[in-house]
Length: 375
Image 1 (cartoon, rainbow, N blue to C red):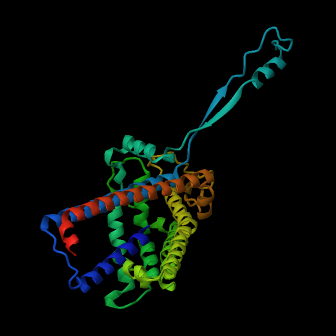
Image 2: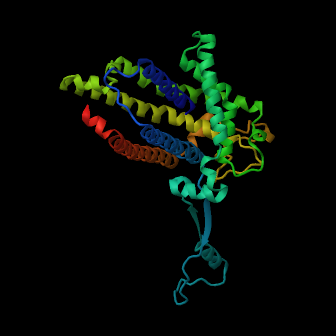
Image 3: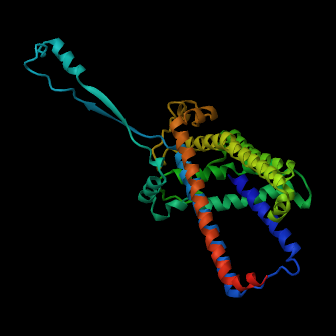
């Protein structure tokens, strides 16, 4: 996720710089009052804050809990129906009757519904266990990690203003160097509230060797999900139509062709994310969860043994689940639950964007109504 966030921020800064360098076109600038600019700026800032809150709470915190939760099961002993004394097969007090009576008892195993089956139940559980601000648990570590990651990736890519490493490779190297901080964030999110401060919970360096492989694969998967659609976009020549005005000037056949190519790029991006990035992130998160210290409890039900796959350190094991077992023990029901979560997040973001677009359009008409009509 950090690689995707870094790429979006970097592209946004580059695009903003280009816009400022070009400046407004002669004759097309529209004067705007100070109060109007303040209202529009407040709307943009509010939209960014809401989208960040949705992405962090649901796309990071709730997603991490969904990846590690193991639904609990409770066993109940159920007695069979009472026998009829008039029944010729009514048991007597001999040995056979005792066996028959025991056979009438059944063991019923009830599997509880996962807490993360719904966003609402997850948030209710978090509030009950960790308070109102639990939706932002781990946020300081997340901000520090993202900032350090972006700085490190840019430094490795262009030290002293010169190209040194390609951007994707620099991003992977930065992820590997900061994998201990990513582990700290995961442990902070999935563990029950603790009196220890976050710097007291920083994992030891020796845990890094169990994380290098899953962290590296997850970082590579993120870069693939970023640059495959990006390069496909450039290969199709869609950069020439990045401005909607250029697309509007094209003939109808060209517009259909461009929209079809854009659909392919989007489809490739979605497929790449679900088939490559998602399994890699699930595997990494579950490996990180297996390294949760024994003295800390998880905030959701969690099988530390991963179905008996983890060999404790006291008997000569690593104490961590392997990458293959981390993914294999993430059963089909859990995978469906996670996919449903991402679909819900997409729907929430879409609805939020449409709402703020409507608000922005209304504000523009209110603030610039006369200016727009005079153009």
